[in-house]
Image (cartoon, rainbow, N blue to C red; front, top):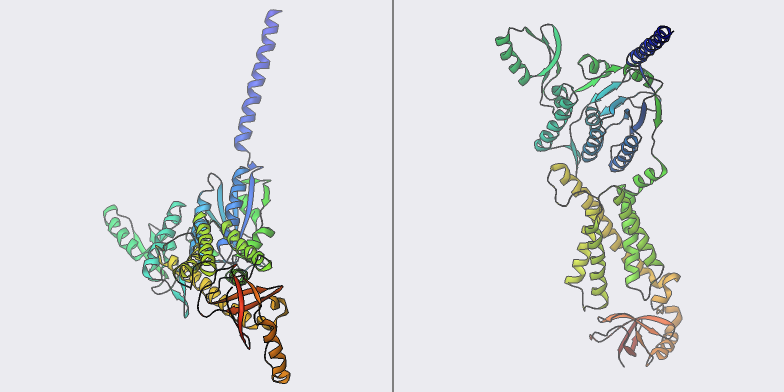
Length: 498
């Protein structure tokens, strides 16, 4: 009886072991499924707002333990600094597998050029749709005469960076260099019958090594001659070992990666992302700066606090908030802006004349706006100098435009009903004769009021419920000082301290 029980237990133990082994075998032999796949589009111009979207999307994918992050790429390129930031973000996505997929379709141009090529090389795998291309990554700068080729210093730095990304992810570094530098000659080379690509320098080194090792090296056709930037089609990318395959859709990529039933999450730009892109565009930023400065000038030259001050606060708050989302605004920029405002107000209301304080205040305001639009203080590279020039141009033109607009408004104030309380609207008209003018002069002479702004020597004074533009004989009169009208000549009203 005991032998029968022991035999039954032995059989059950044997069945359990066999079942466990079968489960382990199935686990190792079955294709991977249920993987978390995140799709992040990189389309249109590569700019700073796209960096914000990519950063947030990658962080979201990492938080949800993404196994694969696929970047759906369709771009002609854009800003070098933004492309470098995106490349760094993609590199930080490990341990997830990063895939660059250059797509084609009715709404796609089917290219990954310029900054798009740099982003593609930062991914661990590249796939391309039929009919697409990748390359032409030479840096350019915007000059007075339009787009111009960057200096050798910039080309050298970017060439090294793209080559480093290619080497890290196992792509031919020579192809990456030839896409950036037009002076590089790239050739097909057969090493013992195996096709590869080499630059002239790499070929010379390989030939020296072949003499020692006995390998047979044969030169093929020139892929990229001197003076031409390299751009490769989807078929050429696969032929030269850069692309992992030419596929028509994402499902083919998942199949090639051995993934069945992927759990796909599409991440797309939100309304907030589009709002940041609009706010931080050069045109919209210029409009905000102009509106903010004009409103600020009107506010600080008018008594009390009203609508212009509110508009100025809103405009500058939107500017700084937008660039804060891009990560380029810190406490320094905000302190400089506030200090500039304080100096400007002190110059207008307290310090006689217009000198060091006022000029310093304007410089601080302009500098704070420029620094808020870039991630560096002093440029170290040529592309940074280009960014600084562009930002200075945007802020400088906006500041000059605001002065012009304020001047036009100041000239037109007597004719604008909205500002009629801020200026003297009396005028001499031929059809009115001098009778009316004499009556107005008589009414104003000897009238007493209070200076509402510092008279240096001109400013504004309040007489009852009326605010008039007045001037003294040259003396400075502090705000709040009682004054008396001693002379009226046309629109010129002269006062003195009571």
